[in-house]
Every structure is written in structure tokens, then in C-alpha cells.
Image (cartoon, rainbow, N blue to C red):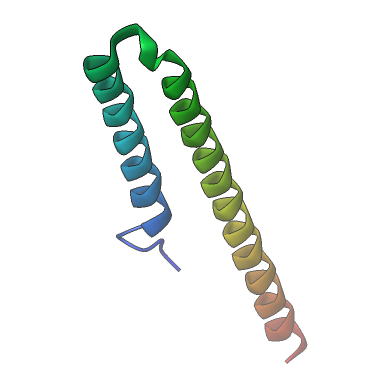
Amino acid sequence: MPPPAFDRLRALAIGSQAIGLTLIITLETVMGNAARPWQGVVLAAMLATALTIALMRLYRRNLARKRWAERVKDDRDG
């Protein structure tokens, strides 16, 4: 089965990184050097989001492999 044309998790990853980068630049523009701690918080949130999305992709890929293996086994037995 071919992969879907639109991957929601990939779109979510790209969107969250774009929003995070925009926030970091906006904080620097508005607050100057006082924005450093908030930029760190935004960066940590970006990393946590990326890790969560990567784990979700891994889970879905492994689930698809498991279902495929079961289907192949059923075809051999059937």
C-alpha cells in the first residue's frame, strides 16, 4: 500500500516548527535581550513537540508493519 499523499503528522511537525521560529524571532524583536529565557522555553517546547511527533510516527509505522505481518501470515495459512 503506498503512503498517503498528505501526512498529517509531517504537516503538524512543519507547522509547529514554523510557529516556534516565528515566536523566537518575535520575542527577540519585542523584548530584546530580556527575551532569552522565553526563547529557551519556546525552544524546549519545539523539541518536545518534535520528539512527540517522532514517537507517534514510529508507533504508527510499527503498527502498520505488525498488521502487514499478520495479513501475510493469514494469507499463508488460509
